Length: 115
Length: 117
Image 1 (cartoon, each protein chain N blue to C red):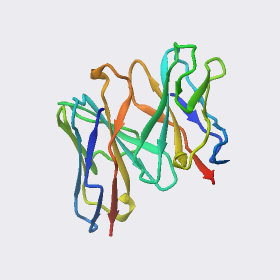
Image 2: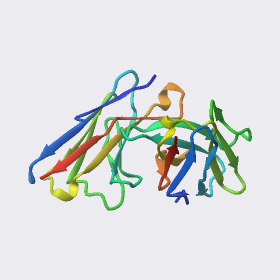
Image 3: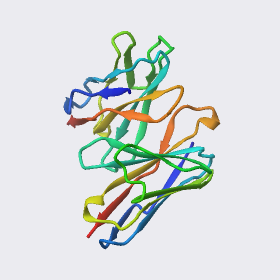
Image 4: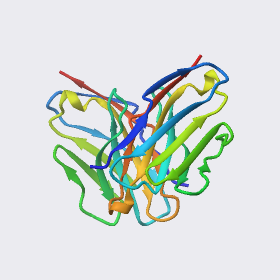
């Protein structure tokens, strides 16, 4: 079974600075999808960014980018120019391409933005 | 974009009663719906996966007789917590798979906070 590990329960960053959230996963599959979701205090889950494992190019969405290292099974999220609205819980998630296509979540990282 | 409407957003019920939570996909057909439970400051725990027109698949340790899931149409899935007890108090979230639209992501409902007194 696949597992996702986020080793940083909490992170904080100064407004306008850059922060990187870590995520590692374990799988024997060669093709899969990886996601970062944001859960603000409203608790609505919001998709931040996604990556297809077969793509070598790292995904980017405005201020959010990932560092996908397939061999190392690492999928970190970099937030540039941090804004107060970025404060939230961030979850890394894995999904198989075949079979049970459920999301497997990491434990989450609570990100605080200091003004 | 794809929207999943989840109701109610919060509910308080007495111990021993049943509560139904609904999730509707508003602008797409949700072939598969996932139901999660989230305790405070914890991650989402998958409870079950429901496919339209078939029985739900429950994760290990989830009581299927307590958490009844129905996915009778491509736009509606329901979770009924039967004979609720205080330990069932939690935040419940649904998520729809909209891969039928050519995407490989999920859309989440806004969640339901259940408090059993």
